[in-house]
Length: 320
Ligand code: APR
Image (cartoon, rainbow, N blue to C red):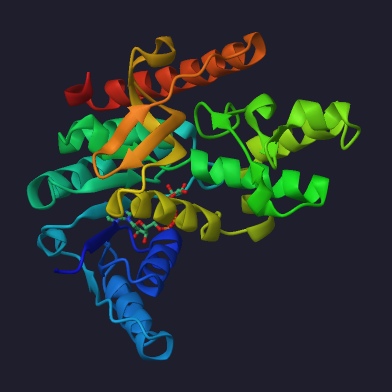
């Protein structure tokens, strides 16, 4: 059986980490695409030279030619720019929207059968635009945010409870960013919901509220510490988990920015919800009953995503 092909569109900090992880796991052969001259080829060569040490035979190729992504099974998109000081949200939208246009067209032409995972921010708007520009089926285009956000929540909860991260599950809904909605009632330690653990005296509502707040601002905390750039290890590993669920048809239940068609009373938007990811891409959107507070918070998140899409449609009339 031929090896799978993983195309990474954007070979920056997340793209390079994705390539490293994909090669180490021998998920398939890797193509690193970027508009930067030389850099993707340099990373591909550097990573290839790790192969003899680590024992992986995946080939890695850096390129600036979309033809090289032909036949990719998975495309992971990190192309774009991060928001820099002095740049307005609309400036960022404008730049990354035009990046999504070229990436969407490249995928449409060369890898129309791929499963596409978008990471570029602002995530929920960019994944929607990428889907529009690529014309791929909605179930084959998703955004990576929820796995990362819930990993951040799980890390903080494991720390608070003094337990293994493996025994903590976390549930996060909504848009990526400050409006995301962590749901403690569906987050557990060894199957015990967080509210029960509070009743058992393992923590307090105040501490959990602080963890929820820190999770929401998780990306910004890392930007502040790094001083230059944003998180890349955890975002990359989160997207790899989604890619593996697709490639191995694992049918993992993961939070992802998925296209909604009436679920949660949302139509034609990408928002973070739990989904089943398998060989069919997004095989099912899981619609749960939300409590009043989570419902209200989810609506705030949906409204924020809608607002961003309106700005996108204003900037790019073909999307309207
Ligand atoms: N086509 C392909 N690559 C592009 C394009 C384009 N049109 N425009 C920019 N790039 C490349 C840049 O050359 C750069 O190498 O995208 C890469 C982005 O890499 P980094 O700047 O290192 O950003 P990274 O940390 O990887 O984050 C990427 O993910 O989390 C989000 O907000 C983050 O939107 C950002 C994205």
